Length: 575
Image (tube, rainbow, N blue to C red):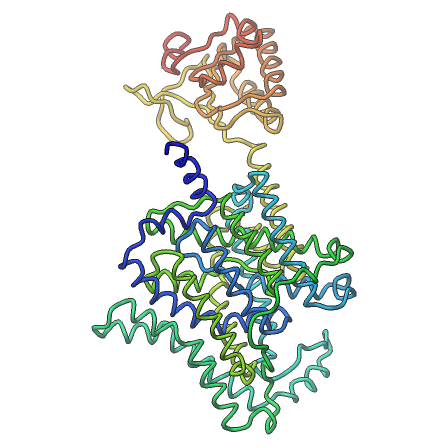
């Protein structure tokens, strides 16, 4: 008997579903079944729309909403994350497929399947290397700039669809655009305007109206999130009833095969993997970061915990499964997750229910999807991603931190002007450069004592006591090769301005480490001060720092300088 406990524990670690399933209640099921139905309603139009956005057959979006969703439910640590096709991944797939080296490979469906498989393998490799915390290395401003830029690209790609036009190829030729706009399909435009109006009404206006009634909040959420499905239904009905397909040339989704595709590895072509690898790496990175960020939002609201490394495993396996089952790359979707959460989902059972409903739809009702007008799907995509455009956030970030604000702005412009991969790479480089600049120029303050206290503060911010022959300097950063020269220059400037100084005290309250280069610099500073008849002293150094210094002869070299436990002790003895 005692041997089984570790096995159960290991099983629960790899299959988090075990943790919540053993305590599953009827109350949980009531919330999950309602949320599952609502999320399934949202998955149908989104699955088709995001596949078309990626330039893929519509069924690939539907397939990506079934098995991968179920796989994440088994392996994921978020109880409410909705995994499936998402707009950001779709535009990244479209961007990858449009590059000359990838388009030259032919067969975009096969390339998309390879992208999904490679993304899954990359995530699993990251999990194997325990790289779950990689999410912390892309700053929020860069992610916000990337998301805004990608959302603008998505909107721009869908505007022609609203008017029944093909993507323009006029460049800067004004006359070409005049001819291009003459091809507007009036019926498609009317459908688009009607769809946009309905979707906008089903947003905040309808929610505000329903909140004035006595309806429960979960039902209000359910009704307000039915907009996409109702839009698709009404647009399909109008198209069929008025024969807009043949009579007015309104573009349709076209035939969607019924049933599931055969599980297959036939898409594997090793010769095509290398050209697709860079794009797959970016898709894997962004899919993981977006998914974990979304999962943390809902987990924090309920006091639950997300395990980043397990998320890599769950998303990695989900992407491998979507590849072998004929779907596109998947990630956690913000809008679906929030709908799932708001509708009362308690566990991933809601997504298992949603996947089951979608599976039945693909088997029995796929013929109904053929007459969905692409203009209505374009409207759904635009309304879904419009909230991701956060230009005002850039000004807020600029006001708070100029370096982060510039990185966010450059990322957005880079995505628009250079491309998705290049834009986010530029943003990451700028963020790291800004961080290195901050580290290389640490905050340093000359401090004095606040009268009648033992507190020492910046002389430029507070009224403090100082001593004409004692210099107290607080360094608010660890000392490394990157910043020790700045510290040396700062001390030299202060000593040149105050020639009467006899004792220098470096306050190490915020110093957590001193590397080898910084140690050599400190030794040089001490030597120069002693040569000029001054002493170097240290106060309030942390234990680990003193442990490192004790391994050298620096503390011996410091004499007659001392190491003080408190800055107050240094001030009393030297001041």
